[in-house]
Amino acid sequence: MQSIFAISGSTRKNSSNWKILKFIQENFKNQLNIEIYENLDQLPHFDPNLKEGEAFPPNVKSFFEKIQNADGVLICTPEYVFSPPAILKTALEWTVSETILSFKPLALIVASGMGEKTYDSLGLILKTLLQEEIPETSKLLIQGARGKFRGDGNFLDPETAKEVLDLMKSLMNKIGENDQNPN
Ligand SMILES: Cc1cc2nc3c(=O)[nH]c(=O)nc-3n(C[C@H](O)[C@H](O)[C@H](O)COP(=O)(O)O)c2cc1C
Image (tube, rainbow, N blue to C red):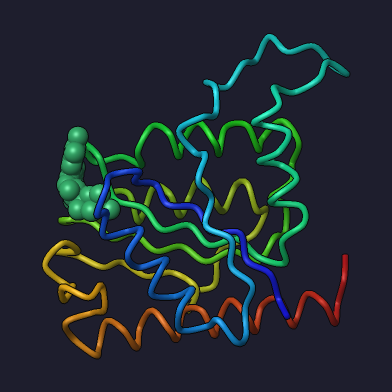
């Protein structure tokens, strides 16, 4: 079974981004082993003073291991003040020091009130970290996110649900391609 390390840019209780990750986890439970990261808010700010060979803080080390051990990464995030939430940006800054996201199959969902700026800027950030574009089929912008859910956490409209499921199929295909053509 392919393994996915999933990161929510929101740690809010009842967060729409968490609901999306839970929806994906439930719908792919027979096909994907998805770990939803619980400790994003425990990561320290990125420290550029760390000397070469010096150990990373334990939470950062564990975060790296989770990325390295997963076949793919899924990021699902809101927009805060026209930017990615700072805790997500912090996590991504750490990955620069180890280049562990290079050529990692990754899917991006921005689920927010509006979210266009973050959809674009995070696309650029991730293109830099991955050293390649995220395929269009592995990116999704969900606007008006909070109003998209029923009480049971499922999507109100089947169209958004289908878009989310299609995005995951695209990520699974990308992982399959990478397995056939390892770097
Ligand atoms: C500090 C803050 C700033 C926000 N700024 C934006 C913004 O610039 N653009 C936007 O689309 N939504 C913005 N929002 C609204 C969030 O996108 C919305 O609350 C979203 O549902 C949060 O995701 P969550 O439900 O997963 O917590 C902001 C929310 C907060 C708390």
